[in-house]
Picture 1 (cartoon, rainbow, N blue to C red):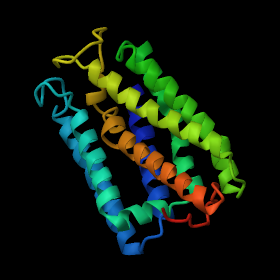
Picture 2 (cartoon, rainbow, N blue to C red):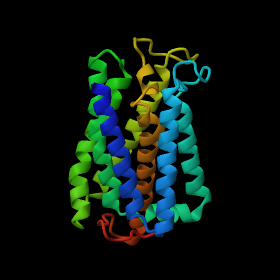
Picture 3 (cartoon, rainbow, N blue to C red):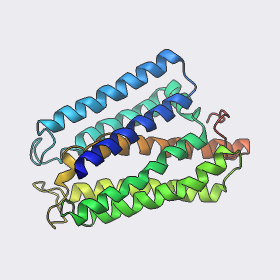
Picture 4 (tube, rainbow, N blue to C red):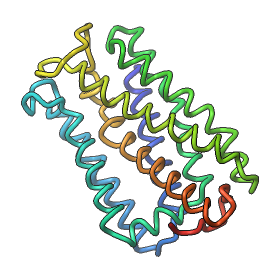
Length: 244
């Protein structure tokens, strides 16, 4: 029952996140349609691979299964960001409130804590990822509200929140990889490790949501740098931010 609830919640979060980010980007309708199709295809592929045990411990050798799709999305996103000016431009066109708002769903980090209480995830991954996401998501609520109303949140606060949210994601990936059973670099050996993250529905977090949230943090950092030279750091939901 808990996994069914998790499936519904994570699927809804993925759909809403993609809908908000693509929907508010200044791109043509055909481009938005392509982005939706690509995101859906990736999500379905991840589900299919996981369903047949493709990300189970040892399935792809000594590398933790979920690390592979995570790395593909992160590397692909960084290549697109730095080598494809149009992609960079369109990411910067997403209003600050939208970039902040999707991170509110990271309150769902409570799932990690619940999985730990069920004996399906171990420390330090579960408490680090769980509480880090919860704090990031809760803090995003007032920041999103201010940005949506056209009131510029403090630049210092935005930088601090963005840095914390980014480090939380990297810490979760690091702790997850270092807790994975059957890998030569496993440091944290408490059972049951992080095997649950290679199963449905939880694989959606490292294989889809984490790379997406990292991209929002990168876009926010770029917008803050851009607004440092253009003045205002708080764009509302309807204003196109200045390009870097």
